[in-house]
Image (cartoon, rainbow, N blue to C red):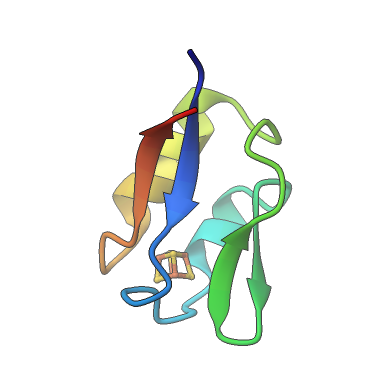
Length: 63
Ligand code: SF4
């Protein structure tokens, strides 16, 4: 079982911090972050993006 990051679009403010931290994983579509490639960075890097999200919109989900 792999875990993948998911963004809650109801919480995301589109600040862009996650896409700056992990540009291969997250990108902004309009003013909402989406996951473009859940394997685009190491788990540690994705965890950093999760920890840096100011509104805690990113979480892990079991695949
Ligand atoms: S860091 Fe959080 S609020 Fe900012 S764009 Fe990413 S998911 Fe949205």
